Image (cartoon, rainbow, N blue to C red; front, side, top):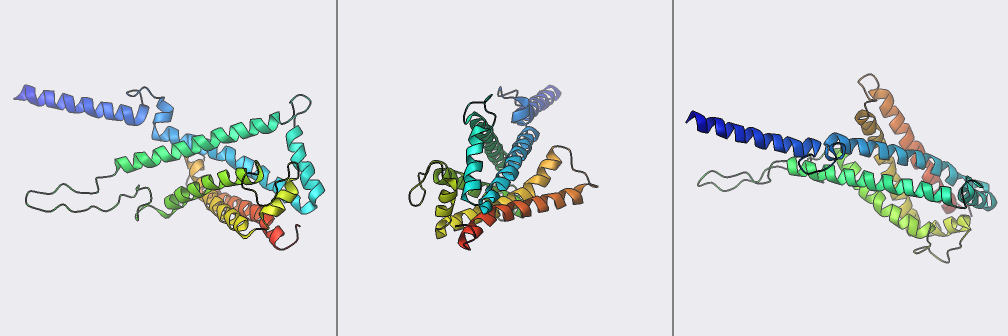
Length: 269
């Protein structure tokens, strides 16, 4: 009897060790220890998010050049394609930036999705196992449910915001980079006129402004979370970090929204 008890206990310990290995280090599945751990995925999200944030700051400043007229804005767009010349060939620097951004977006979205799925798997089953002679009772949603009613406000905002931004990026590229869904005639090499065309339509303004509001909320929650993940946050710095997050979110949202507002009000035409 004692031997059987020790054997059962050893088997239970081995199963627990295998579960910890799969959940934390990933060695049982042959994955990378950093990527397979929740901490590793959060770190990937934090670093990729900061890369995208730096790009957004530069992109917003460049967008505001539209207020200086068509010549200034079109010249800026051309300069982006010649950065690094003659060492870098025409558009090489721009394509390098695009590749880094694509990698950051894919890594950010993949880590976010996998963390969400991991949270859902970790929650209790929706149905409790009934006792003999009793009907099954439905359990409440766990706080980590993807869009469940008990998910926190910040969690729901980040997840819905991420989906909105992902769809917006596809539309934005097809509109102002490839011209596939651009209203009217897309003019290669004339970004000023293309921007005016887009924001001369009601749906162009709605899509852009909604996406920028989602971006502001995403930055507001994401910046502070990234600071905590990377070990920058502390009880003494929390207020300062949240203030920086709020200011960044407000400035970026206002800066991006200023472009369609300028077109709608006739300041940019």
